[in-house]
Length: 198
Image 1 (tube, helix red, strand yellow):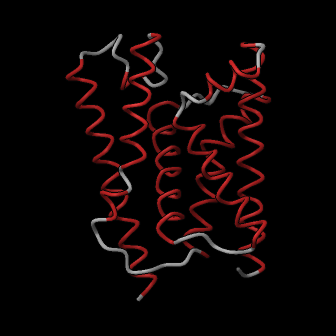
Image 2: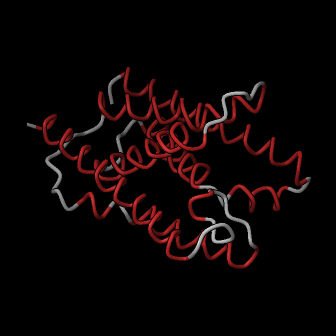
Image 3: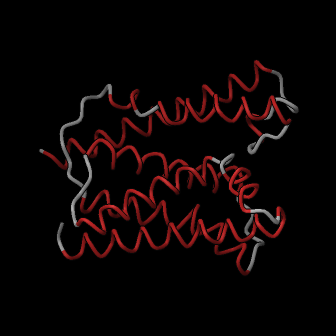
């Protein structure tokens, strides 16, 4: 890794951990129990994906080595979707203080700086187009996991997969639509990587 790449990887890791720590602090104020707080936070795609970013970039910052191209591209895709979905469907811009830091570290800063690192410093290879479908494993796994949790306790973290509000058919359509968005975004990233590799 170059000096600039290394420094940016440190910045991404630090911002991700700050965002996660802020989210934990806010959730702990409500739950008053570490295990309970972690269990609640583990319901959110945002938290889990930011954790992936934090661990990935911490590893690169410590080792000064880039991780596999397929993995860093996948993580970048997933965290970018976090930012896009938040700012198009879920954003609340009236927050302040720690709430503002928690929201915009995990939904804005981490996606943006991860994307900058990937475009500028990742190892770009001529990915096969079918990789866009392979990258769907994480959102598909998450949807199955969170709906399973929701069926057991009635709590759904995102309105578009809330079976207490929508029929199974509607949630299925919403989930398929989200996966199609992931797939198209994956194709765009593959196109960028192929151009950068040529």
